[in-house]
Length: 207
Image (cartoon, rainbow, N blue to C red):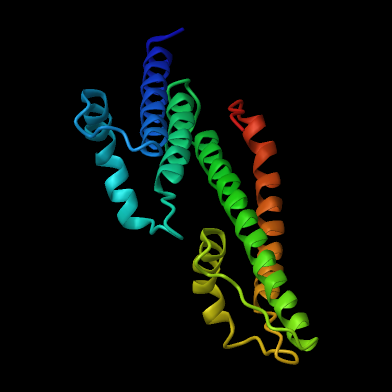
């Protein structure tokens, strides 16, 4: 192992340790730890420089903070790129690795968002059928699951409703949005499939 590979391995290990620190802070936040505990203060001091800017960029939905998850994914991508660079790979395979990782993460989040849109569409259909049968339908928006579902999907749907008509008072906007996301997911998957052979030929298989 050369000196550059050793440096890359060391940097990758440091990034892995930092990921564990962020994960530990997230887990400890679930149990309301003592803020004066030296270990808690150490974790806060070392993770806040990354988590605080991430929270400003990534808003919470339904009281849930998703910034640590995206930070962990970003560190994982950076770790792979660092190891690849210090392993002697050329720039092209490294860029391919980074692009492939980004597309994989984007595909995952878009898939989850599409499922949320399908769930929102199912609620719309259920409420519409209940109304057609002459029965009242009330959705408890104070429930954290329902609140999360509406807060996450509404920013997109309120813009899309300008272009999607209703059918017999049925709002099909969530299903239209889910269909459009499905098309985008297919394009992203095809793009990822085109990247994979070139990354393998470059000798930097990190996916």
